[in-house]
Image (cartoon, rainbow, N blue to C red; front, side, top):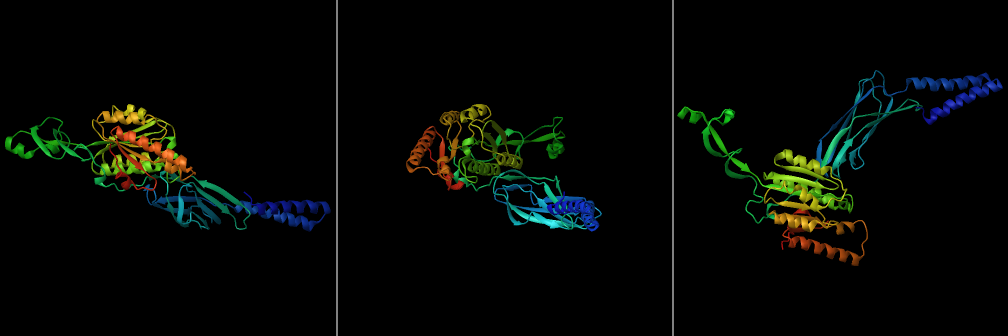
Length: 417
């Protein structure tokens, strides 16, 4: 592609040729043909050759607020110089350039390589892709520009922040709640010895008690005590109303932080954690333990966006058959715009579940982006307090979470009625 300079030069050359023909001026015609020939020859030798691009990231998964280190390796695989090559690595607009530059001007010889290093700040959770790489080659006289894209993408997942949760903040009325893995006196998969039994074809050889075999002459197998864990259920409200507030401070962002922090706390204690996200539909992750479940939950929370208006009672009715008997349930919701919340909480409490409602205050988030008259704010605040009091009266533990309050502080504000 010609630049404006090349277009003017070519047009001027044609004009000189035509004018020279009109006035029979050979010198003017030769000058015009020289300009035209110069542009044509310059177009033949322009181009960036064959360029190879490789991108290396410091990590594929990060937490919100962390830094991402990026290195771009640009190599000239052709047999000629790239001339003036501009390289630009496209980054998501949600990420901020902290240091270095994601663009550079190069002039690479055949086989020569150059590295571009920069650091990105990741202030928002989500699934992102870095790329493609834009290349723009200019020839020596800046008469031709050749643009192309290298379709090289690097996917990255930004998890919600994990806040510290103190064990003393989470209490239960029943001894089994929040106790982590508990050994049951029944045979099954576990670590403690339970009894000996005769070998049955199909039993693993590692379970054979060779000392008992040497003593009795019969193959005996070790039985272990089955380890059971507490099932914990997290219900996250990601309805459209959860977007109230700023990009960094809104009920949904606080909800994802609390869900991720609680999941990390209980999975670390070897509890089994389930996650249900409801917006325009219900997404459910069955209870499980271990690092695999931990990253499944974080990945699900990273992709959450506010949409829809599914009521809480529809969620609890759909999941009632999947809840373990007496298991604790955390409801993370602003409780705004849903009249079914009290009925859903009463139903869960009636089934023997210990219900905790962690409710970010959407009214206070709204004040961050719009001016609410003092009288209107007081009325809305009173309505919210009455709503939370009703939930507490239904047997739930209620936490009124303010925007400027840390999660550990909020968990200390549990009110039981």
